[in-house]
Image 1: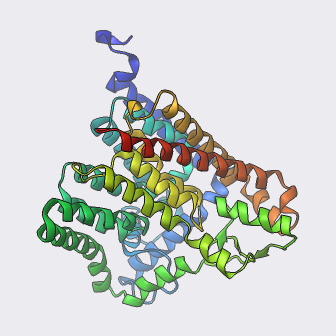
Image 2 (image 1 turned 90 degrees about the vertical axis):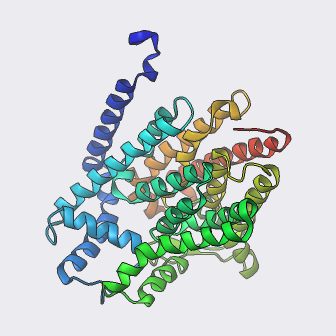
Image 3 (image 1 turned 90 degrees about the horizontal axis):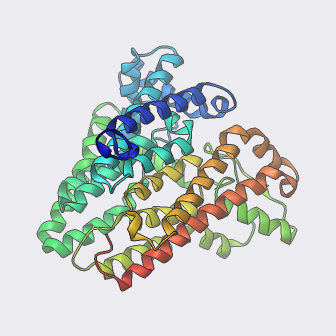
Length: 417
């Protein structure tokens, strides 16, 4: 017991100290050993975008670009904090420091607005996700999405829509929540609320997009970034990336590697119909989750944290691409699921499967990513990291499935959260 008779884990000072220790450990990992060489690839591109804008004073002529407007402004802001156009190392340090700050905000938000112990759960999963978080901009978008969801919970739908607009203009996946939010608005206030939410979402996007146009970017630069993402092969990291090679290997079909647009991936040779279904199998799963929660929660009008975890979980597990950082799109919501929402032992099972997924994910990427890539140049079915990656994906599929079963069972209950 700590001072005052409280358990040690309920003392704010202990959480603050542990958060500082975890951030220090992530920083050390990010700058040492087997993590740095692969993690640093994307920040180099961020730095190039920032250097271009800060040096030219315009986004015009930046060439091929895969990043959305919000991300470009984030990079430019980091570059300005690093002292303007210059060396990469100062930019990287500012990026890492910004992500440490964003991670602290995640922990604080969970501790403040989540159930008992939520801050600890958020910190636990961040530690297992690893130094990747300091090298990407997932924390920026996930903080926007979490904040929008908490506003949604308080029935502040228009501010929630504005934040979702900003988030979607930074990374595309938050758009999955927009139809759900519009449905909530319609149920709450019909056309008046619906139009307000639609206008709020558009305004959030415009806050980010309009300055980009004023700074010289063309509309084709924005649509080109979307086309860049849509024209990607099947990535090797995800469940489909593990499953399709396995099926083709059993069928005796050689794997046709097709790395492009920043993805080391392949094209499916399972036939046009099967490939189309595989590319879009996430869509019915997401639609079923929304419909199921919508039908059950007639009086609440906002999705519980478990539904958010399941929604993004299916999108990630069934997606054509699954970069390691995509897991962070859904994992933070697990911190907001009360222990009592699941049956006895289920929360621990979902958390344990998720934790194992994150640990194995680090082992594959970035620690052994070079060997993992090499296996696709030959006998990938004989490579241990192919199978380890498959195990990781099966564990994640199991976590999402178990959470989905619990969500379905909530249809028989009221007041699940």
